[in-house]
Length: 106
Image (cartoon, rainbow, N blue to C red; front, side):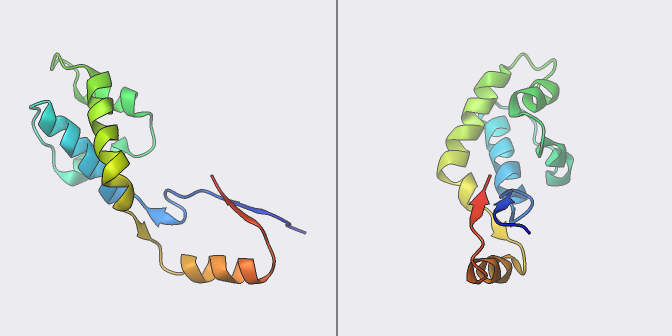
């Protein structure tokens, strides 16, 4: 019988796409880089930021670590709040809590 629930936040409980994409756009704008359409930045979700910025800035002469710093500056104040809870998650978590199952978010 399952005693504890270990849940992932991004992509499982919440849709963090908007915050991630806007933070990537912020970093690119601050570096004076061209802005790809939102859907062309979806591949940023998942891989390490440094790897993704190295790929998108290839040949631009920009420092990927500076892009990561700019991304994190915005994410830490605004981007982390640009999340949407998936439908049904609140009810699911409440039902599990009522059943006495400890819940942990990774």
